[in-house]
Image (cartoon, rainbow, N blue to C red; front, side):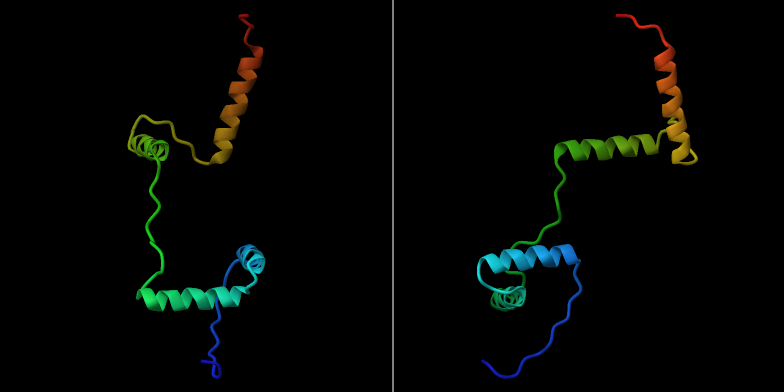
Length: 104
């Protein structure tokens, strides 16, 4: 099957390419060879040669998302115009704690 070839141009983040180049180099192939292998396997599988699914959040992440939804819909939840307001409030709380008498 040597002979004619076609060019395939893809854009990828430099750090991903560098990591892939290193990994494939460790097994003695180029990233270009790895892409060729992937494409051949995709042809044989008539699709992705591996399972592709959406990420499934764990219980902690689901709980955090539910809490965020509750807060977002709570009319009594404190709101801020911008991040600097939050930082100002934190600074004020820290200053108040530093002035409070120590109970230990």
